[in-house]
Image (cartoon, rainbow, N blue to C red; front, side):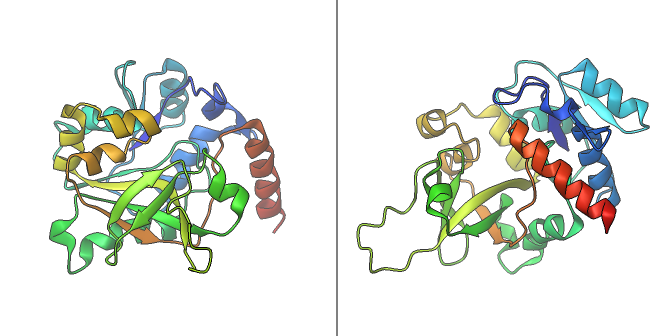
Length: 242
């Protein structure tokens, strides 16, 4: 499922911006289908524009309610009556989504502790202090078994003792959910921590759900700003040239 809202606050209409002559959302959809990992791939949107561009390309799209707070709510509404086990949330603004990253997040459901996992997601180690301190970069801390303990826009943990070597991880917003977990999410009210941080996966933690994190080294390119789109154009040009 690729949740796709037209009215992005930081970069309105970004999913319909052209990347190499093709809208970003179409590139993301096609890249996700090309992984051959899924029985079905859908774009879930509140926008006629996005719905029409996907279906015009022969893709599958679902119209959803406009008033959803976040992508998880949008997906939950779409899958409620579907016969599925695992649903993966691919971000609509990641046109270079690849098989390796999605395989990593799905692989956790094959481990010894699979029965404890409500959902899985990805994290990338970061070392740049500007990125660590950037509130637009969501950080995550995990326990010894890589279950998420908390997500924050602040640097976590706070390094009071500078002699202790602390790894910092950026949360990469690709999720794999058990169907029941995302339906529960849809029905539970937003808690104060989620409301304060504006990070939707905190809701799972506030209600005792288990989030297993897998570490990846693949950063990808998220289209959050016009500058990101320029970077993506350069990357696409390099790929085409090679």
